[in-house]
Image (cartoon, rainbow, N blue to C red; front, side, top):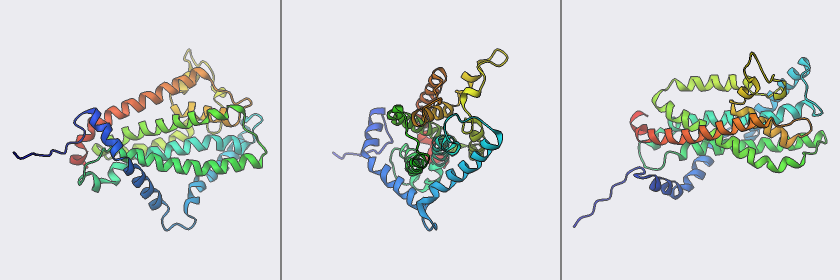
Length: 277
């Protein structure tokens, strides 16, 4: 009696997640490859992961000074960079994971592996950049002789929150971009607009509680990056950088919703990727 072996991409949810664990080394391989390619044949190598956030911080610090925006007891550069760090991670991870399937189209059409590996590995690469930039933040805090408050021990939870937000958003964009190529232009707009729609140069306390009967500050936290930036400043800067807890809860719910729905939509579209790529 002859036996036939059928290779099928995740016939059941249980098999799919088991496959994901079996292909765990692919996470490291793709992340390492993308990281090396990103800085290959560059003049200063991985230092480029610092150039963009530092230059952006310098420009926005000038805006804060000229606009006389309040930063409390925190020096302007430190106030801005503590917000730039999570925003840069989220925006870069969102863009890179969104294009991950298209950039690896040759793999998609040749071999089977859980496609979830691609967008998540792109987020991991951005996480490495995040930690490199975090070293500069530590140096900046040392220069200003700024000691983080005791709640700095909650920082890993906020990092996990921004990681989840990046993965969830990246899964949505990656799946949509395979079917609709013009989504990449929407991503570019989101990155540019998102910087100004997030509290990088201002405190969320400056947003009024009510506006024409609408809970404006609470609605502002529908943008999950708002709650994440609030959390970063609370953990790293303390002082009068307090968390607006109702808003932070809204951002947390949005992150979880985006992550769960992103996983659902990505899995529902996964079988069509090779046909539409």
